[in-house]
Length: 151
Figure 1 (cartoon, rainbow, N blue to C red):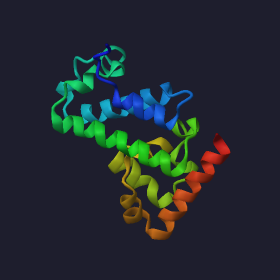
Figure 2 (tube, helix red, strand yellow):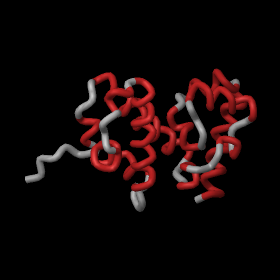
Figure 3 (tube, rainbow, N blue to C red):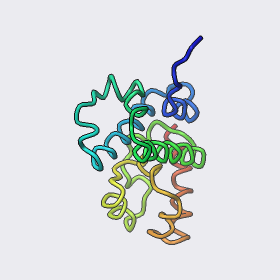
């Protein structure tokens, strides 16, 4: 009998990209780890990324508030890719590929966004606040088109 706890981050990556989830899984885990490092550097100081984080054991031992960061980020990824579709190009494509100029600075400053994938960690309501309703709707359409072009 298998008594190991399933890795919910790995599971999310597999839901988004069943054929090749490894790069997405690594990216989500790296992003969560980086977020926790900014908030509580002492928690991540002695963690080995490849051993502790990639296996999922690092997340099992976090306090509930820090686990909440992992949950929120993972749920954001699922919602984002369910909305726009998956393309591995999202992991490296710069924000400028789809984001209007007015959104670049707030996304970089407030959300530490660098690539289109980082948009998965921004609540859709925040796009409306940053860009306005029309520009936010246009952004979602651009992201959907990007998926079609870049797949």
